Each structure stands twice: as C-alpha cells, then as structure tokens.
Image (cartoon, rainbow, N blue to C red; front, top):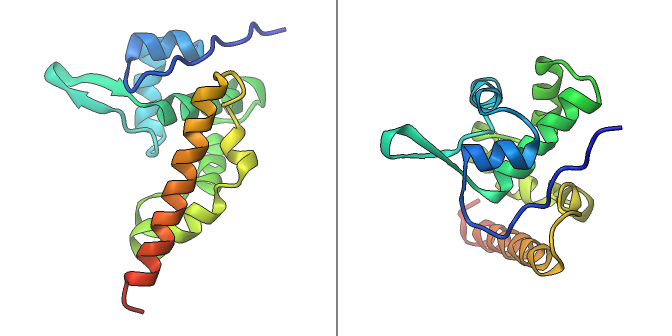
Length: 143
C-alpha cells in the first residue's frame, strides 16, 4: 500500500523541491511533466527557478494519481486532464463560463481532503468569487 502524501501547507508559492516532496516525485519528473501537460505552467523567476501555486500542486497530485495509481499512460492522462479542465482556446472563445460551471464541488474537493479546514474554506470562497466574476463578465460582454 502506498504511503499517504503529506498535507499541503497554506503557502502562496512552492519551490520545485517542496512540490517534489509534497507529491512524492523527483524534481526531474516535474520538469518532464511540464513538457507533457500544457496545463502545468509554474511561474519562472530569476535563473528560471520554478514557483508552483497551490492549484498546480493539486494538478500534479492528480497527474501522479492518474499515472501511478490508475495506470494511465502519459497520453491517456493528458486526455483525461483535458476532459476535466479546458485550456487556452476554449476559454478565449467564451468557454470561461463553461469552465466555471464545470467546477463542481466534488471536483473542487479532489485533493483538498488533506488540507486544514481554514484552507479548504478559502478554496471554496475563491471558487465562489471566480464563478460570480464569470457571471458578471457574461452579463457585461456584448452578445
């Protein structure tokens, strides 16, 4: 049986070493996954240092689960992620509302079970605010 992953601290940014420990993979695997999964785009700062945000850590845990636990190939995991989270062009073409609607509470809870109650509440608040902003944007944009 696999050892459980450590809980994700309430921080804004994580280094590649921290993410590697939180997700149970090596840093070179994370760099490889960045090439394979377009949804995974950590911020890069001085000297090309990567800084991951909380949602990216959750995505990496999902990728790890798909590959290591569920037995998906990289291509299969990529397709599965694209089904769950639309990217780029779909959002630019007005898919933002569809994306906001697709974030059900169950999907939002994936990967959040190991967080503190306070951090979980912040994630739900952010989800609600984001959804409301998309609704306002839809009302204001010309049809």
